[in-house]
Structures are given as structure tokens and as C-alpha cells.
Image (cartoon, rainbow, N blue to C red):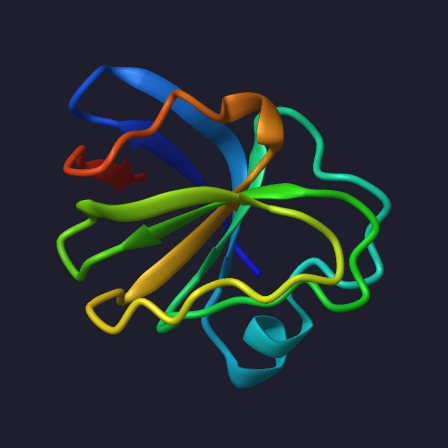
Length: 113
């Protein structure tokens, strides 16, 4: 998986400097399974994707659902062993550390580089 930087272009905040992009079926299915934590400045961008689950996970994450243009449709904290919602208009889900809760709001635009 290649690393990407994620910036909230609405606020200018850098959300992740070392986010991995999961584009293949295998990397999307694996996600963060088997990891012990999600370090600060990291994340996982899963695309295409409109729903995630936390089955088998050990820690909570901030799940950010994005439309094809990178606009935030929904963001929420997901706890271990829970199912996230199906967001039909979502094209991607960005998984971030819970510490970034409040740094992303519906309608804001996220960009990757």
C-alpha cells in the first residue's frame, strides 16, 4: 500500500501524513485487522468503500465516509466489534485515530497528496 497525506482543505488541518491507501480487494478486506493501534498522523483510506466493520479490532477509530469528490458525508467513532453504517453515497472511508474526532465535519472537503 502506498502512503498518502490527508488534508482537510476546508480548515487547512493536516489529518494524516502517513495514511495508507487500500485499493486492492485484499488490502480493503484486511484493513486494520491485526494492528494493535493506529498511530497519530496515520490512517487508512479504503476505496471504493461505503461501509466498514470493527469485527476483530482491538481499538476504536474515527471513520470518515467520503463522496467521490472527497466531501465528508458522515464521520463517527466506531468501537471494537461494532458494524459501521452503510452510507450509500460514499465512495471511500477514511479510518483515522480517535484523537481527530472534531477535526472533521460533514460537508468539509478532504484532499490527498
